[in-house]
Image (tube, rainbow, N blue to C red; front, side):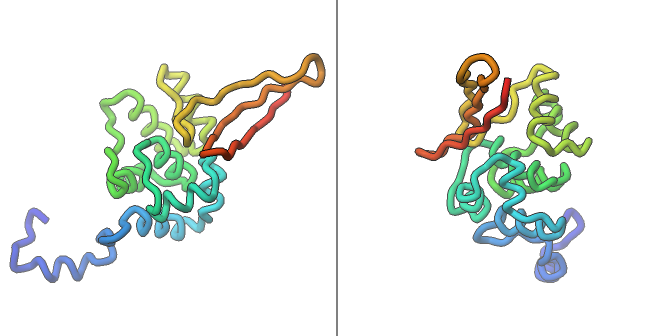
Amino acid sequence: LQETKPSQTESFLKENADRMAGEERPFAEYFRAVLKKKNIRQQDVFLAADISEGYGYKLVSEEKHTRKRDTILRLCLGGRLKLDEVQRALKLYGMTPLYSRIPRDAVLMIAINAGLYEMADVDALLKQNGQEPCDIVAGIRPQHINVGEGELSAVIEVSEMLGSEYNLHARSG
């Protein structure tokens, strides 16, 4: 654009139409196009991001909006987006891109560049480097509830709470 003259604006827009963000829902259009190119289903993204399908579809379609950047980062990780794709997705959603001089963002950038897309792996790397793990969708840290005693005991992790919907993940131990 630095070399484009005002008289060349119309031709520039025509030549780059496929790279321009749509006017109505730029994040939705971009995110779906990236997933289509990677042959990844939205349901798989929501599962990997630990986001309920209903809420995930509403976020991706921009029917609902979140102020939590970690939620959009979860979608990007679930969709296995590369760093440049994550940065563009964040911008199109109206959020600040990752910035390498912020320690937590630097760790996230390293994880993405290394191909770490599993939330558990990303959170472990964040914790290992003294940073807060990614917020769960509702923005509350997981709560561990001990149930039972002896061999029948279990730890239940409440990992997502949306309204009155609770998803419980149990693990023995």
